[in-house]
Image (cartoon, rainbow, N blue to C red; front, side, top):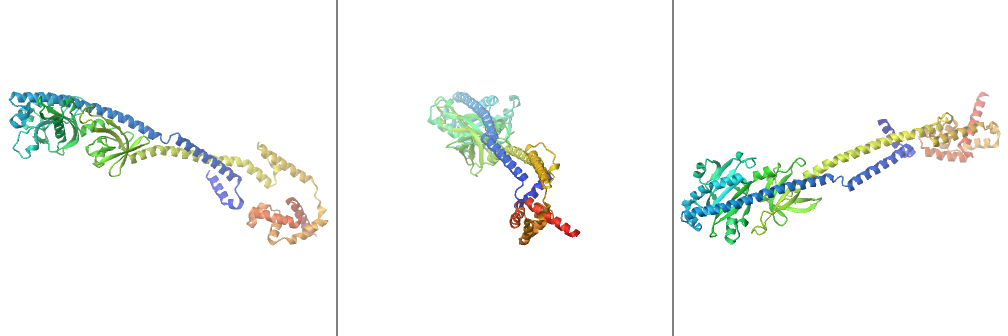
Length: 536
């Protein structure tokens, strides 16, 4: 195969002098055919969507995974919402009853700090039992009062309880690890609770959206508690851990807002429950974020996935661009682009004061990763096509060699005047040609050569006209006289075959001969005369 390529390469170098050989013409024709086949195959693959098959498959996987995660988020958050409302209703009645037992109206709760610990101690078991049955990671109760009205910043300090479940994903409540995060230490110790290092006695509500927003809304509306639950976007308590908190106002029978209560859903729990399948895309991640005007608020978003994307994405809004190829583009403030799908989730009922708030579950992957993934899948197809094209090229060279073998053999027989020795090869066109040439040679041999023609005036004229030949033409004529062929003369004089043909025409014209055969007859006569003169 390599030797054949070397032969073709050598033929190409001589193309400028001798023209394109039959073999090269055949190889070129087959190459054009192969190229057209490959281009046609590429066009078919392109228009039938083979190159986009992996993208379509990825979109289908994204849709399936997004639906699975969205249904899980909707179910779990709805369960937490219902549990929060039920807990708030139970606590509202119980706290109001405790106040009435001590001869205090709910509206005077903040005037009696001595009752705060009593209320919290009575409600502790309700919070603990509620956490055991909830799908949240924590439970809290914040009274609109403080047990220490004389401390600094007492206006923003609120008494309450906060229990955290450190093993919220355990299959059974038997394995829960519930710890004490907020509340009077005496209540924690009396209930044999493990107190967290980040423990504090009371809540700082100066910037506590989970407290301020539902309390303010409860003072402005008369909707039932079941419509006043509020999902506070992700916040971090004392730089310890972040969570979303479902907060419900505690409303007494006289419409006094006594505080808030509810369950929390930590970022860690969200990650453990909703991390997407990363078998196809290692950097895929899920995000649950509030949205507004085609923008996702990243500061309040919850993340799930093995990729530490929350440390990479800026805390600014993420813009949702138009969908391309069924996957939307999401652009961050640092110009990073992600591809993915999103779906909205209604956290509130239709008549809730917060129904206009929109939350979206988003499944994302870096655009660079997606491009690499698609290119990797298509690279195999490209390599297979190239391998096929290479095989076709090699086959073309082999076929051209096999096709040219009988033609070359026939041409060599004609060149060496051995047509009579030619053996039929089963190719009608070549066999008929060789048979015709063989018969023609036999007929020529039967014709007597007039050896006495040298005495004629034509031969004498031929000899005289030799002196009219130019130097170049005489050199060619002398080589013919020595019995060389036109090809051999071209090689000897380092001329092209076309130049030899031009000289032949001029020689024929000056010597008054009509063909190469007639010229050879006269040269044969001259050779006979030369032999005769040597003998004498």
